Image (cartoon, rainbow, N blue to C red):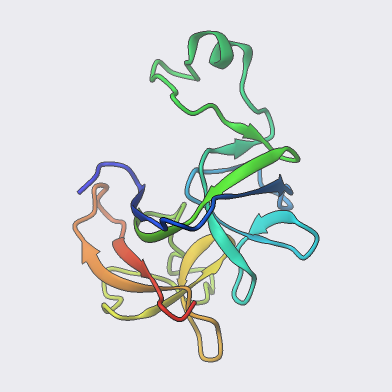
Length: 173
């Protein structure tokens, strides 16, 4: 088990990574590495939603600032943790990685219960449940929605209070 909140466990070998210009969602200042993205019909990338043509997961964080001078020179960001992957800028070309198995944990990657959320994933969500995406996050697929992944297992969370799942790409997708 990894201590990261998002890990690609098995890449989709033979499936090329995709790239496109990522549009900034209204009211969003950053999207973490691992956000699910799709094409919007004009080769721009947007957060994946049910029925959208899902292509993969962001390879890097994307924000409104992009890499700072300090990031570029020293490979560091706010705080003292080294940054191997510098953030990308909304409106620029970004890449998405195809995967057939991932681990994801927390509110950045899973639709959480509350506030009328549709398809929340909790520690009680059963294995073999069909998953789709809402706002670039894993969500339980509702009747009639395309299943993109299947919940393979609930894992012990790294951060208390969050669900952590292993999801496998659905064979029919």
